[in-house]
Length: 171
Image 1 (tube, rainbow, N blue to C red):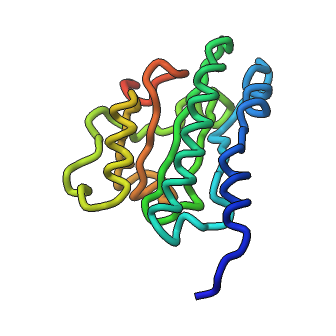
Image 2 (image 1 turned 90 degrees about the horizontal axis):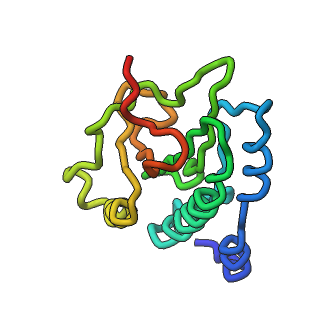
């Protein structure tokens, strides 16, 4: 296996990554809209090497989620803020922003209450991470099997009271 150089510098730079200002600036403009706009945090795929590296990237993702959560309170427009965690592909983990737009008012029509993380996933390393998120007030949902194929086998994480809710929409 080829030795990767510069990892200390990479993780130091990653830990300082803050996407809050650029997204909040755009989200606060009433005439802009977002159709599942998102920000990835593992562009190199390092999180696919081991759970330790995957969790490092997820920690940065949720640090940014918390920072945006704190500053979103001043924005008075419907916004969906949520994260998608792909169990087998860290590069696809992302923080999503969605507003009503010409294509869709609701980001994930297939989500229903009760699609929470199940005990069948207890042996996966991500299970403990997701349980910790639930203790911190996040809601963790599994993607439905018949949903958009890029989200199949992933977890959708949001926080009730931060932007618009992802569940409870009537058909």
